[in-house]
Image 1: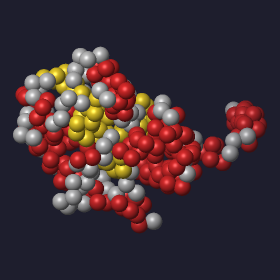
Image 2: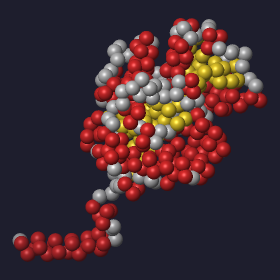
Image 3: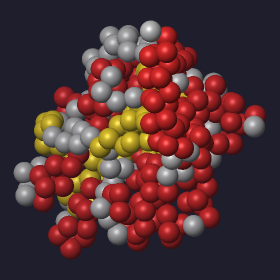
Image 4: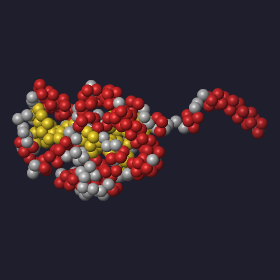
Amino acid sequence: MFSIRKSFLTKALALLLPVAATLSPTQAVQAAPTVTVGTVVWIGYAPFYVADALDTYKKYGVKVKLVNFADNSTMPGALQGGSIDSAMLTYDMVIGAAAKGWPLQVVLPIDYSAGGDAIVSKTSIKTIKDMKGMKVAYNPLSPSDFLLAYALQSNGMTEADITPVHMSPESVAGAMASGSVPVGVTYQPSISTIVASGGGKKFHVLFSSRKAPGLITDVLVFKADYLKKHPKEVKAIIQGYLDALDYMDKHPKKAAEYIAKAMGVTPAEALEQLNDVKNPKLSEMMANFEKSDNIASFYTSGKVIGDILLKKGQIKKMPAIPGTLDDSFVKELLAM
């Protein structure tokens, strides 16, 4: 019995050795893990588009697959349900998820909207107060909803002072062009599309995130248990992202080509839209995680966001801000 088993093993090994010899040491041990990251088309995510085009993650031993969503408001549920490993969300979405008891945590501030989100209207509408009683198109439970709520609150108004028309951000441009709504809330590149339509004289930006930089912050989010199980992969993704951000600084024109391809715009349009966002560098990122009066601090912007969501009835209680954050990866990279 022993001799038969030994003979079988010898033959099996003889068959397997040539195959193993064709594999690199890394492949023979284990293929690079793939992490799925939910995203939407948004200029603030430009470093991820560059990282994807150049595969800057490869040298850190991880693969990243971007999963495009038509509606960013569906991503928190997809992440919580396990359809994706990670997601690029706005921080108000994280607050909303935390209020439901979902253990989503921010590991990286991606960008601050500084004009990239806006309320766009007919040029005859001059102020937010002029919107009273008018139809306003926007996506509920999204950054557009949040920006609108902030603008209304800043002008002593509430949602009751307008007529909400719910639709996706991408549908706003068509609705305004058709004349069905005089006001819409959306983000780039839809803002530029709307403003340029009608010869550039029909619509204008009425209010934008430029008036509150840091209020709308896009972040990279994982579930808490994923962070505990896969810290190497998470760190690798951030390292690949930072390499892409550095490439954008050193090769802006070439980077714009990659960004344009991912967004379906021209390189010139990509460069122009980058003016509407700020992607913080590693050295600037701890400002988001630390307590301060700066609106960029998650503690400050989180309170403003929470107050608005509470007043709108979108959450029942304000979640604890520390529970939504994991700054350990940024701290580790800063110490390297």
